[in-house]
Image (tube, rainbow, N blue to C red):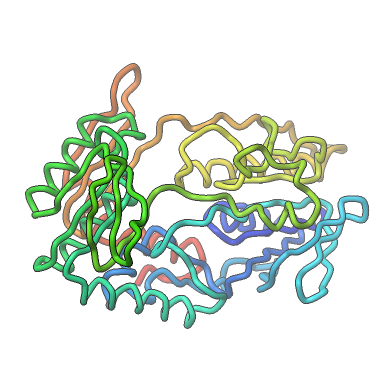
Length: 368
């Protein structure tokens, strides 16, 4: 028996996990503007290496057994009539609505367009820039910036590569000084120039960049890994700006429900839960939200469930590859700084495959 209509807007990591969990107990409709799942974890390598171009794209067609996936863009939410309107004019009735539209990442970790062909073309353009540039600049020394700088260096050992970071150490937002030192040592040993305390902005002339001290740096190509923006502009345009906080994240309570709307949930990078916005946290939120949605739909009767509060993930394992065969892994240790593991663990856990076999299995495909 299926209980109620659940519309999930956003087919990223959180949306896919939640839709799959509810597929057998509710009538699920997953809406995404992309025609395929975008495995963002593999996107930095895909933006550098041609043989990885299509790896991040996994079809949605095997995800749901009973539910359905709709390619489209949500433009309006009628909370009184409990309907979502798509740009095509189609209206989707809901008993529970889930906002899982994630966040927008800088290039190349972005799906451009709506089709796999359009996104692959964008990756091809990045690959050509990397292949032809003599000096490549990566701005941002967090996990994405470090990973991208390593990928570029390994793909272009003959080029000049600079990583500029505004903070005092690489990976400083993770709270692990040892991991930051390890990342810097690897990059510098491979010929990457690391500039710390260097806030960069575009210069006055094309292809130039200026730091906070006024120093000019020239580069043929630049990539910015300086943070993400929640994909919530559509909510503001749809008249639901009151759902958002000052940074544009959806405000949720401990049950991951939108304030004042118990039939609307928000999960993953899009909400205002105070934690690292990483994939393990998004998946953990999806699990709790799925349980609470079942609780909401079965609020009475012998099948009712007690809702659960979500506990923010402040310390989670974090893996930063340095290409396919090295990297650093941070494992939280109770009462102390994270344990830092090296290349072998990182390669087995993530670096070699970038978790692509795991995500393919999640969407009903074989690992290969």
